[in-house]
Length: 270
Image (tube, rainbow, N blue to C red):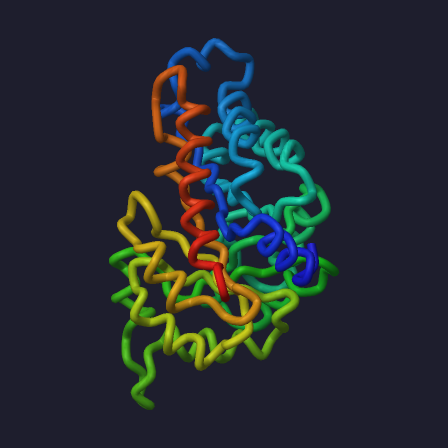
């Protein structure tokens, strides 16, 4: 998916919602466990009721990898079920030496129809560049994450007074373009967005941490948007586990719609 198509989808839907399909088998409603593929049955129901409210889906591969072959099969069925109108993110946090990264890229961009993959940039340019060689595909590089451990490295000050995450984002932005690079920036650190927009004014941000992790949609929307909107706000647990009963899909649809309505208000006049 190219950048302009994504922007058009956001403008047309008046939503920048990304639904996270971090599907935990232990949290699936019990009545689905009799299904042949409970993971996919759950995901399919969630997708059906959230399609009109969101522009993207993020599949955290760990929840599928942990289930072995049947988990990978559910992942493949899920990503194939999501229509091409929606931006598809493999939240796999890959990143290795060049020849290995090339194989990861082929796995998610050629064998599976993902539009993007999350990348850990610690090993440097040659570990990221292979993901940037595919037309219409994106690398979403970890910038400033929302977990407490971000303080261990990302927020550490360098000799020039900048935080490590600022140095990483500035450096990585030179490896690709606004057409194939995004950055993960956690919603629990809204005060950092204004500074980040000085470093990368035009790039898209994937913003996790709204909902169950306590990030404020209003603060993020006010501080992180650029002229092309430039943000995808991911919400996982607050939507997909809105109910654990037989009405789980209905409740998920209602919750996704409420996020989309709020987003439409923040987009007014933007």
